[in-house]
Image 1 (tube, rainbow, N blue to C red):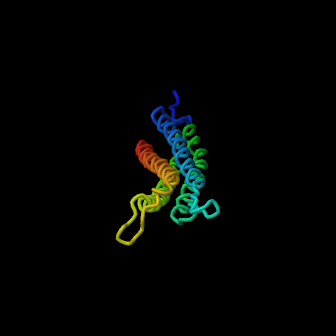
Image 2: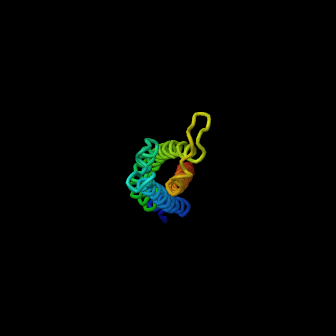
Image 3: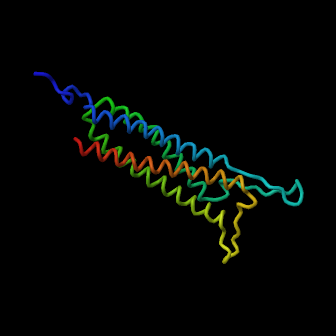
Length: 179
């Protein structure tokens, strides 16, 4: 009798393809979340006021929502880097069902954390761009244009990371349903 692929502990071609796609999606998510965290954490702009001795400075940590965004994105990036090892395990080993369930749960938690951080920062960016005239909160993006552009770009990378995490969750569901 000829041993099958599952008896040898090697992933069948379809499951191996899913595992390889999982690995590359994790790499893409790492790039998006890590770049977003770095871009937001290094965002600042200084404007002179009347003279060069009096200046106003906008930094990401002036707003707690941006700080939460940086922390959430950093945590998710670290998790994604650590999860690469388990993703490699899934490429090599077919019968790793327990770790696939673990990744599914942790990917869902990471997606929720990243979405919460992104949503909090998006609310502040919306306020910075539009302001609220009824309560005399004026938009600051007319003065701090570079700051707002960089923060908005950071959010784009973060939302791309959320989309990739959703794809990872769906991919884990497909891989578990094939077993």
